[in-house]
Image 1 (cartoon, rainbow, N blue to C red):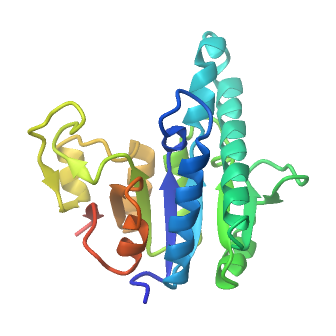
Image 2 (cartoon, helix red, strand yellow):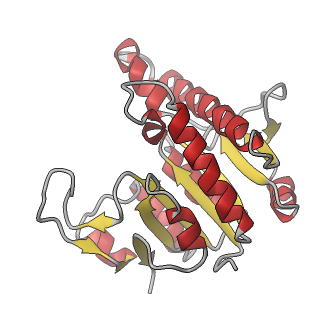
Length: 237
């Protein structure tokens, strides 16, 4: 049985790279779809926000000197591509989904409407939110925090390449110490990298807990949904 009624899963675009240097790794996509299916079968309503770094950073050289707003819109388009790919992987497993975009593009996605998104979740559909907030200057972390608050999610689950929050980068420092639980104030005081400040502040102001965990380890998502102690939990008390 699910420990959470409704969750917002935040995935980075880079996570879809797998072992490739660019693009989308089909094996990673398939594993994520399988893990999301298991989590949904455990009883949770699942919404997803995915970044676009695997695609957009590949054209970073071409955007040097480009207007920031234009470059940000390119990043939003990259999130739509990843969202469509994830939607396809989920639907090939028989999971009903809805892709909702903050930028209108009716041929590929529904426009984002809060009440409609909640209704989809209540009907058991996995809802993917694409195109960030629809505004430049905001990251997909901020989009995830905003959508989580709007749909009244119980928690934000941030899937990463590492198994939680450390006092320093564990990929560069073998002696890094992992936190099983930490408060939001401690994250800010220690200047730990969890989300950008805007996203983090939104979570703090609305008391939305955050779990940071390794999405690449099979079954981790389901374990969190079922209440197992995985990754690091950020609370506000």
